[in-house]
Image (cartoon, rainbow, N blue to C red; front, side):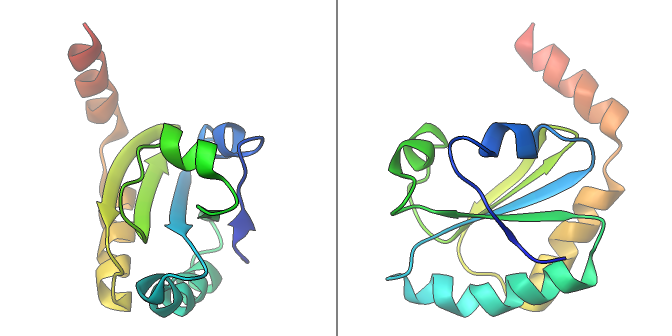
Length: 120
């Protein structure tokens, strides 16, 4: 599956979907972002069941600010609409695969309990 460009109009509805959504926050002038892009694109081809989104921080400054992006590239992972991972820095392919597997392995009932307890 190809990556999807996300904007302030599509971000919320995309990450709120059931399943896993990864979001790469990037900019064209960012060297590490350019190094991470082919790794991210290759993973999107290998994992057709995952939505791979990209947010151009230069094109979407309001969305980037709302998400608290302080460094790029930043990778976020959402599962069933819940942010379960966020980390700045370019990842090598093996590390990205480990993140994907960890997100797949999450006990979402436990995650929801933790979110509810934290909100209370």
